[in-house]
Amino acid sequence: MPEALMTKYQHIAGRESCPFLPKAPHVMRPSEARITRETKSAEDYYISALTCAQSLWLEGKPAQSLLQLNHALSIHLPYNTLALTKWQLPYRAKIWLFKNHLETEFLGNPVRHYQHLATRVSGQNKELRSWRAWACFHLAEQQLPHNKFPRDEHQIKEEKLHIPSREEVHLQISVLGSNAEMMLLNEIYT
Image 1 (spheres, rainbow, N blue to C red):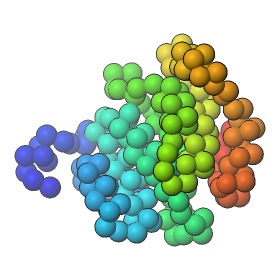
Image 2: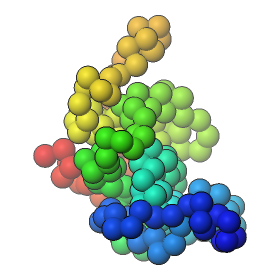
Image 3: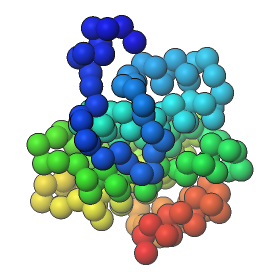
Protein backbone atom coordinates (compact mmCIF):
# COMPACT_ATOMS: atom_id res chain seq x y z
CA MET A 1 0.00 0.00 0.00
CA PRO A 2 1.39 3.47 -0.84
CA GLU A 3 2.86 5.35 2.14
CA ALA A 4 0.35 8.24 1.77
CA LEU A 5 -2.59 5.85 2.16
CA MET A 6 -1.03 4.08 5.12
CA THR A 7 -1.01 7.32 7.10
CA LYS A 8 -4.52 8.31 5.97
CA TYR A 9 -6.13 4.96 6.84
CA GLN A 10 -5.28 3.36 10.16
CA HIS A 11 -6.76 0.81 12.48
CA ILE A 12 -7.75 2.33 15.81
CA ALA A 13 -5.20 1.35 18.42
CA GLY A 14 -6.64 -1.09 20.94
CA ARG A 15 -9.93 -1.59 19.09
CA GLU A 16 -11.41 -5.03 19.61
CA SER A 17 -11.60 -7.21 16.50
CA CYS A 18 -14.83 -8.92 15.57
CA PRO A 19 -14.35 -12.57 16.63
CA PHE A 20 -16.51 -13.80 13.73
CA LEU A 21 -14.22 -12.35 11.05
CA PRO A 22 -10.65 -13.13 9.96
CA LYS A 23 -7.86 -11.01 11.40
CA ALA A 24 -6.88 -7.94 9.39
CA PRO A 25 -3.15 -7.50 10.03
CA HIS A 26 -3.02 -4.41 7.81
CA VAL A 27 -5.43 -1.79 6.50
CA MET A 28 -7.40 -3.19 3.60
CA ARG A 29 -9.42 -1.07 1.18
CA PRO A 30 -12.59 -2.29 -0.58
CA SER A 31 -10.75 -1.93 -3.89
CA GLU A 32 -8.39 -4.73 -2.79
CA ALA A 33 -11.35 -7.03 -2.19
CA ARG A 34 -12.77 -6.07 -5.59
CA ILE A 35 -9.49 -7.01 -7.27
CA THR A 36 -9.67 -10.42 -5.56
CA ARG A 37 -13.19 -10.87 -6.95
CA GLU A 38 -11.89 -10.22 -10.46
CA THR A 39 -8.69 -12.26 -10.29
CA LYS A 40 -9.13 -15.12 -7.81
CA SER A 41 -11.62 -17.81 -6.82
CA ALA A 42 -15.00 -17.22 -5.18
CA GLU A 43 -13.56 -18.66 -1.94
CA ASP A 44 -10.68 -16.19 -2.03
CA TYR A 45 -13.09 -13.33 -2.65
CA TYR A 46 -15.29 -14.47 0.26
CA ILE A 47 -12.31 -14.43 2.65
CA SER A 48 -11.13 -11.12 1.19
CA ALA A 49 -14.55 -9.49 1.73
CA LEU A 50 -14.65 -10.74 5.32
CA THR A 51 -11.10 -9.52 5.98
CA CYS A 52 -11.89 -6.13 4.45
CA ALA A 53 -14.97 -5.92 6.70
CA GLN A 54 -12.72 -6.53 9.70
CA SER A 55 -10.27 -3.88 8.55
CA LEU A 56 -13.03 -1.31 8.07
CA TRP A 57 -14.43 -2.18 11.49
CA LEU A 58 -10.97 -1.64 13.01
CA GLU A 59 -10.87 1.79 11.33
CA GLY A 60 -14.15 2.74 13.03
CA LYS A 61 -16.30 2.39 9.90
CA PRO A 62 -19.12 0.00 10.83
CA ALA A 63 -21.42 0.97 7.93
CA GLN A 64 -18.71 0.24 5.37
CA SER A 65 -17.87 -2.97 7.19
CA LEU A 66 -21.51 -4.09 6.89
CA LEU A 67 -21.40 -3.39 3.15
CA GLN A 68 -18.43 -5.75 2.79
CA LEU A 69 -20.38 -8.39 4.70
CA ASN A 70 -23.19 -7.92 2.16
CA HIS A 71 -20.66 -8.71 -0.58
CA ALA A 72 -19.62 -11.85 1.29
CA LEU A 73 -23.27 -12.94 1.55
CA SER A 74 -23.73 -12.44 -2.18
CA ILE A 75 -21.09 -15.03 -3.09
CA HIS A 76 -22.42 -18.45 -3.98
CA LEU A 77 -20.17 -21.08 -2.44
CA PRO A 78 -20.76 -24.79 -2.00
CA TYR A 79 -21.41 -25.31 1.71
CA ASN A 80 -18.58 -27.80 2.17
CA THR A 81 -15.86 -25.39 1.04
CA LEU A 82 -12.96 -24.72 3.35
CA ALA A 83 -13.80 -21.00 3.47
CA LEU A 84 -17.28 -21.66 4.88
CA THR A 85 -15.97 -24.33 7.20
CA LYS A 86 -13.57 -21.83 8.71
CA TRP A 87 -15.74 -18.69 8.45
CA GLN A 88 -19.51 -19.12 8.59
CA LEU A 89 -21.78 -16.86 6.59
CA PRO A 90 -21.42 -13.51 8.36
CA TYR A 91 -24.79 -13.28 10.14
CA ARG A 92 -23.13 -13.45 13.57
CA ALA A 93 -20.55 -10.88 12.50
CA LYS A 94 -23.37 -8.48 11.59
CA ILE A 95 -25.00 -8.94 14.98
CA TRP A 96 -21.66 -8.36 16.69
CA LEU A 97 -21.16 -5.11 14.74
CA PHE A 98 -24.70 -3.94 15.59
CA LYS A 99 -24.02 -4.53 19.28
CA ASN A 100 -20.47 -3.15 19.43
CA HIS A 101 -20.45 -0.03 17.26
CA LEU A 102 -19.98 3.26 19.05
CA GLU A 103 -22.74 5.89 18.97
CA THR A 104 -20.25 8.34 17.42
CA GLU A 105 -19.57 6.04 14.45
CA PHE A 106 -21.66 6.09 11.29
CA LEU A 107 -23.78 2.96 11.06
CA GLY A 108 -26.40 4.24 8.65
CA ASN A 109 -29.79 2.58 9.04
CA PRO A 110 -29.26 -1.16 8.54
CA VAL A 111 -33.00 -1.91 8.84
CA ARG A 112 -33.83 0.45 5.99
CA HIS A 113 -30.77 -0.63 4.01
CA TYR A 114 -31.67 -4.33 4.13
CA GLN A 115 -35.29 -3.54 3.28
CA HIS A 116 -34.10 -1.69 0.17
CA LEU A 117 -31.51 -4.33 -0.68
CA ALA A 118 -34.03 -7.17 -0.42
CA THR A 119 -36.41 -5.44 -2.81
CA ARG A 120 -33.81 -4.31 -5.35
CA VAL A 121 -31.41 -7.22 -5.69
CA SER A 122 -30.41 -8.11 -9.25
CA GLY A 123 -27.86 -10.34 -10.93
CA GLN A 124 -26.79 -13.88 -10.13
CA ASN A 125 -28.51 -15.75 -7.30
CA LYS A 126 -30.82 -12.79 -6.78
CA GLU A 127 -33.57 -14.81 -5.12
CA LEU A 128 -31.29 -16.27 -2.43
CA ARG A 129 -29.54 -12.93 -2.00
CA SER A 130 -32.91 -11.21 -1.52
CA TRP A 131 -33.94 -13.70 1.19
CA ARG A 132 -30.56 -13.28 2.89
CA ALA A 133 -31.15 -9.51 2.90
CA TRP A 134 -34.54 -10.12 4.56
CA ALA A 135 -32.77 -12.30 7.15
CA CYS A 136 -30.38 -9.40 7.83
CA PHE A 137 -33.36 -7.02 8.01
CA HIS A 138 -34.85 -9.13 10.81
CA LEU A 139 -31.49 -9.40 12.59
CA ALA A 140 -31.11 -5.62 12.47
CA GLU A 141 -34.64 -5.07 13.78
CA GLN A 142 -33.99 -7.57 16.56
CA GLN A 143 -30.74 -5.90 17.65
CA LEU A 144 -31.22 -2.16 17.02
CA PRO A 145 -33.67 0.26 18.65
CA HIS A 146 -36.69 0.80 16.39
CA ASN A 147 -36.93 4.52 17.16
CA LYS A 148 -33.39 5.11 15.82
CA PHE A 149 -33.47 2.56 13.00
CA PRO A 150 -36.99 2.52 11.51
CA ARG A 151 -38.31 0.74 8.46
CA ASP A 152 -38.87 2.74 5.28
CA GLU A 153 -42.60 3.27 5.76
CA HIS A 154 -42.79 5.35 2.57
CA GLN A 155 -41.56 2.41 0.47
CA ILE A 156 -43.92 0.06 2.29
CA LYS A 157 -46.89 2.32 1.55
CA GLU A 158 -45.97 3.35 -2.00
CA GLU A 159 -44.99 -0.13 -3.20
CA LYS A 160 -47.57 -1.96 -1.04
CA LEU A 161 -44.58 -3.89 0.20
CA HIS A 162 -45.11 -7.09 2.15
CA ILE A 163 -42.41 -7.56 4.78
CA PRO A 164 -41.91 -11.32 5.04
CA SER A 165 -41.91 -12.82 8.52
CA ARG A 166 -38.83 -14.51 9.91
CA GLU A 167 -40.59 -17.83 9.37
CA GLU A 168 -41.14 -17.03 5.67
CA VAL A 169 -37.50 -16.00 5.34
CA HIS A 170 -36.30 -19.21 6.98
CA LEU A 171 -38.53 -21.33 4.77
CA GLN A 172 -37.18 -19.70 1.60
CA ILE A 173 -33.57 -19.95 2.75
CA SER A 174 -34.12 -23.62 3.61
CA VAL A 175 -35.24 -24.18 0.00
CA LEU A 176 -32.62 -22.00 -1.72
CA GLY A 177 -29.70 -22.16 0.72
CA SER A 178 -28.41 -25.06 2.77
CA ASN A 179 -29.09 -26.91 5.99
CA ALA A 180 -25.96 -25.34 7.48
CA GLU A 181 -27.27 -21.84 6.76
CA MET A 182 -30.67 -22.72 8.25
CA MET A 183 -29.07 -24.18 11.37
CA LEU A 184 -26.98 -21.04 11.74
CA LEU A 185 -30.03 -18.77 11.44
CA ASN A 186 -31.98 -20.92 13.89
CA GLU A 187 -29.15 -20.68 16.42
CA ILE A 188 -28.98 -16.92 16.03
CA TYR A 189 -32.69 -16.32 16.45
CA THR A 190 -33.08 -18.48 19.54
